[in-house]
Image (cartoon, rainbow, N blue to C red; front, side, top):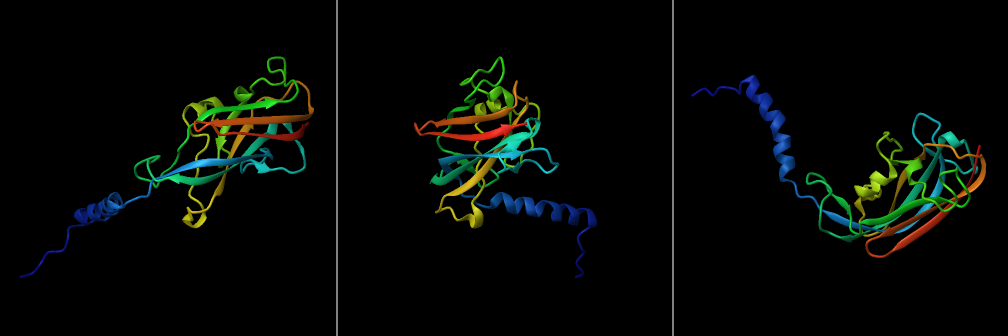
Length: 199
């Protein structure tokens, strides 16, 4: 008895759906992580490839970005960010995230006033939209989105970067210190500062 080959349309459907069926059967490890340290770095966002760490200490105010490097470690194995990916969800949610200037920033932001409304959250790649404010990032708990450590070595701490972009220059240029305070639901708090000359 002679067998008939698959028809072309049927073969196309099988080739398209097989990877989807296979991927839906895979088991992913859902990880919960905790932030254990936070450090600030100055960055310059004047190029086309996103912010670049700037160690010179002087950055154009209209291109100023802050790089926030946070150290994380696996603290649990429950919960996904999204069901179809190996999730790295923040175990202890962010309860406070505020940027300050040690000196008056402008008439509406004297020293010690939150500057969250002047910064856009840009994520790990430095891209942001006009709606991606720091306050929105805090409310939706994606300020600290950790990616898998290199080589998936989850037994060791690893670092992830995020960027926030200054959207309005200060009333006067010159030397200033930015201070970041972050708190999490497990009562851990982190404060770091960075000095920069804005020109």
